[in-house]
Image 1 (cartoon, rainbow, N blue to C red):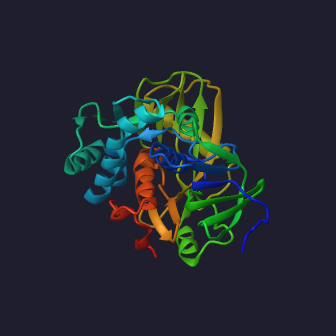
Image 2 (image 1 turned 45 degrees about the vertical axis):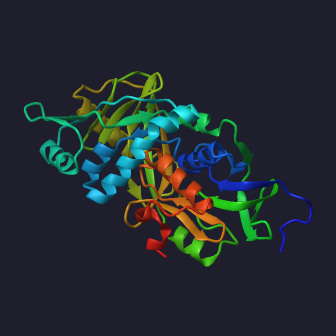
Length: 340
């Protein structure tokens, strides 16, 4: 049953959510000649409250990922240079460093997974040239260029003769294909059972970062409890991982602890800084890898990248774009059927 009686704008694909996964999917679909609209209420989302790490080597070592998961992150990283060039996203940096803590264990994990690295036991430093980064504000702006962005909140949806009709706070929109890139948000009204099940498997994780105008480092430096990375003309200090937390109000005590850890990682005495603390909520799945693919006729999900949304963006975009074209599933490890 139509949500509205009046004619609505129609597209080949509607993406709900303008974070890294949603915009990467939309940009990939637009590159393939599809008419795409993105529905998002605007404001700061979790992808903006991030350092923009494209860091398979460090992430795999820190989280002690399996070889299969490491290959997923490596494949995602390998898509970034061409994707960045095509979309205008600035991809930069190839040096990442870990200082302090159990560096020998991290180096062993990198070696076991086949990542290039250098380990200096005397200085307790581990470096790799396999990682890079983007600046989220610039990347989000670049990815949105040329897209139809409907600044509204999606309320409910229903199947129709074309595919899907979505009611938003500014009216309705129709599309043959619908992609849910809704982060850690709850299910929207009208989703079929398979999609509700997929969304229900997403757990929120709050992350807090601090934006600093001063340039503290010229490459990514990580260590126990914190990282410091370049961001635009300044720096970013991050990041907490707080499962189950949904508040986007920064927690002063956690921010103080994060700053103290950052100074320790840098090996510097604390000094006054002007910091813009921010909190964002991202989603994760039970196995830590995202869900990407078809869950019902004309309906797809791009959800749960944990803290690797920027790294995984082009890969997830390609996976869901392929799914809308009926191509064989190339990343079975990410398919939502593993939870359905």
